[in-house]
Length: 151
Image 1: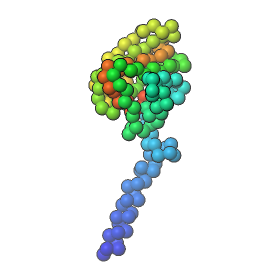
Image 2: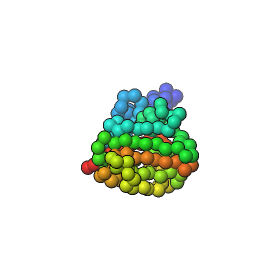
Image 3: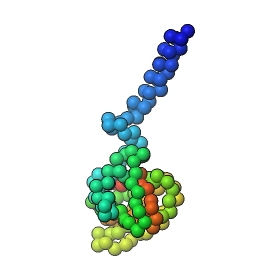
Image 4: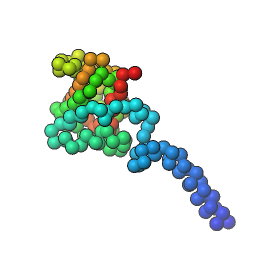
């Protein structure tokens, strides 16, 4: 009886692991959600606050578990190569302590949005936007930042 029980448990574990294997699309252990498909973040330049210049990977690596804390009165800037359609932010905890500002090619402010009090936040971008500034008014933990093209 014990041997057949062990076989059943082993087979159940193997069957439960199969969907996870299919979800590991990147080959390096990241589970890539469908939402990441189509993002063009790698074509953009991310300018981190002073002291965090080498930490941009924490918000672009596709890992929900990795994040970067941005302190009060710091800002993150994203330079766009061309017109883009939207900005997606995933936070580690809901926060209303930031603003999203969109600037044109001459660095004129064209849109300013308040924080959304959700973990997953999407901001449509004005067609004239060439850079985005995310300014922190309190400590904010960002898990993921993605830029999507105009559709």
